[in-house]
Length: 554
Ligand code: ATP
Ligand code: MG
Ligand code: MG
Image 1 (tube, helix red, strand yellow):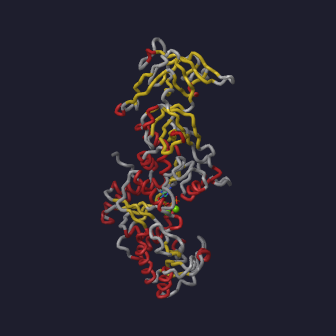
Image 2: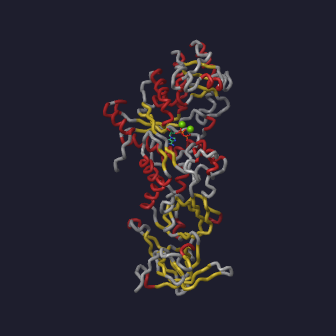
């Protein structure tokens, strides 16, 4: 393996190891909330967390951060597990933050006993009001000085279900005048009745908040480096406050890095959920979605996504990345590994008039021009073949047009040179068929005494398979639909032409045995992945993963 590029987090870890910090161990975790599918931004975090664990002989846990039961469910849990494994990673342990609810409750009781937490009766609205602003200190809650006994009693009764949602919360007692608003007595428990938690069912009606749960879960698992995104930088003092105040056996170190933002898409679960729920896309795994499941269905490989995450790097500065960078990762991988096949997107019939009517011959076609180890396949050839409409013009529009023209010659890829002798049109002047002749001396050989530069792909009419081809374009027209600042809703930037469906395409017969998820290069057209779905009549569906060349250039 080539050594991975270093980054500031790797440097911190190496320094910690050299100094013997954390007993010389490296333990990380990937902590998704199961309230949606994983997206390309999560891939960055997964590659970082599992990557450093592997490289420094440590381990990484998968931990579901499941403290918001009304938005979470088991479908999301299962999808996340599948996606992490598909990316090529194995977790050391699978945990749920809800595994720790009993311990977290005990920690909260301990905070109360030390006079570091209190039950507050202010409403959510009032708590916000009392909290103050960046320029104005907060004010103490009238419930701040409740006695330890009263707080213990009220907290036990919160757990027992004696109070309504919102009637009371438990708050840490820190500093209402702190310049960091996160330290102004943050809420650590709230009441939620009537939700069935996907793991704990109806066992609890109080739920711990993220900031309280996360640091303690990290400590309980012996995490050494807790890597998270930059919006948690201001929460780090709170993270440390809980761990210092509770004197946990272990004190993990929180380190923040910048979120990935990919152009022409969105990577907020709230917005992705809206795309799914409002029917803007077919589902979480729609091939236009920046989800891992969508990218997989589109034909992306785990290797390409890992490569992309290494390329974009890990820093604290903005991480806006062009779609072209992601596409180059998959293009490079597929160029190496994808077998070549022929498919005609817009078929035009060619009759080879001097080819015997009843004859079919088998031709050998290499699966990969630069990789002999991929072997070859047989393709059949006979008197009638289909070529692409775009590969024929009656008169060449310019010198660059190296395809077939009236009276001109072209090579059929892996087969013979043909000449167009006659163009057949219907009553409206539409070209419906070409009559050509072939030169039998040109199979695998240059024609005698003349140069034929153009090579076009084709399929054999007798056994070509009808297929549906789905061509995808950017999901949003605007590079930053999230922050366009042009007064439009982000959904108004959706590209109405992000999916073009071709239902009259033809693919070579060998693709009958392709497996769903397999990706091919359709020569001269792009990379295509066989979808799980089939159209009525058994017609296979291929998703275009990416075009052969970068089409994003501005
Ligand atoms: P969202 O805003 O999409 O809901 P989130 O951070 O709330 O994102 P989580 O499921 O909590 O989603 O994320 C799990 C982990 O993945 C966290 O550590 C988070 O920081 C990281 N992560 C999420 N989005 C990105 C991103 N765009 N770039 C890098 N890391 C990310
Ligand atoms: Mg989160
Ligand atoms: Mg979230």
